[in-house]
Image 1 (cartoon, rainbow, N blue to C red):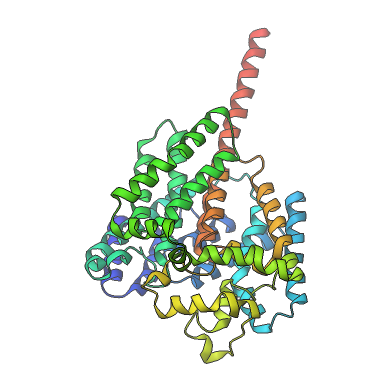
Image 2 (tube, rainbow, N blue to C red):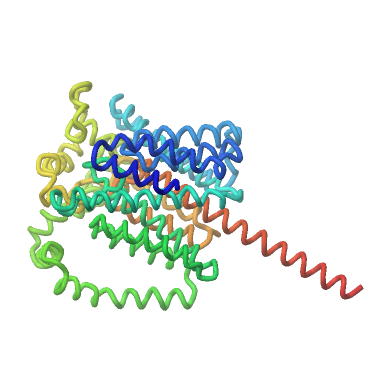
Length: 468
């Protein structure tokens, strides 16, 4: 019955006014109240995760920070587990602050950095404190989100496919601002979650159907560049979890790359194959179409070779090409120039601003492509925290994955690979879904470990009884 209600609200939202999704948010929470109200932590986590369906990012940011405040500050009394990860986390924050001070970053950039990066900071703190609590009852919530996004995909296809061509699939998110890419990443996390559940639960067909549903949403977004980085994330996770069998699978996948490339070049639609052929054969077209690669070279090689401070600690938080820095240019969001004076650093003006303006003025052309946009989280990490920040973050990432299950490694590696093409350190929808999937995976691992320990104790007791 509740799925029928979901469908009615989604249909009205897509056809009349997307703001009706806020009513669906309330309905979603109400339908899951029995599963998600065991304590304050699960209650506020459910609010943060349910807010992913909303057609704006700021509501999710507020809900996620509220969950962090309740679960970490109030419930845990602000205690961080003493570990190598927590030490690296402190060093990472220290480098970010030091870089900001040394580069005399303007107040307006710092203000927008705090707004943009607070959820990311909360995520990093909670990542080091992933516990062994059982959240399996909250699977119903993510099941409902999957169903809602499937319904929205169908409705968007019916209403918008003929008029907006490739950009019709945005789920329940707002139109414009790259919602397709966000929907892709969220669906990718759900795909991994459901497929691993299917694989480890004696081939449960319901989990397989859910995984197929997530895959359908993922493919409907038409984000083919992210498909490549999705595959790279899976490969990287297997690389960090090498066994002879996984090594063979990884090598087989690498050997298939030329075959896949041949098939794409010869049999893919012209909108995909033609640009790829030109990029492989024409250097000037490569620079035009794949400007992000040029920015990577500039950020990691050219500028550090001339500016030692930039190479060591970057240009300061919010002062290169993070979302905060882009907002402060006045060319990223419409409201900025009405309230603030643009604040642009020397390196942003000379290496970022031109292509940012191209994308803003002509977003439907190649300049609006994810490959041409001159920003990503890895670029902003290097540009704003330097090699010291990069190294510390890499060590944190390794510490977060160490001794974790392959599912955790896969989710984190996928997220990292996606961050090479977009600013997903600063999109709270992505962080909230990633954290929720990590929590569910870790709680499943804890449950399996508990079952194994219980079985071992039971077996030991039986053997002791026979011996007596």
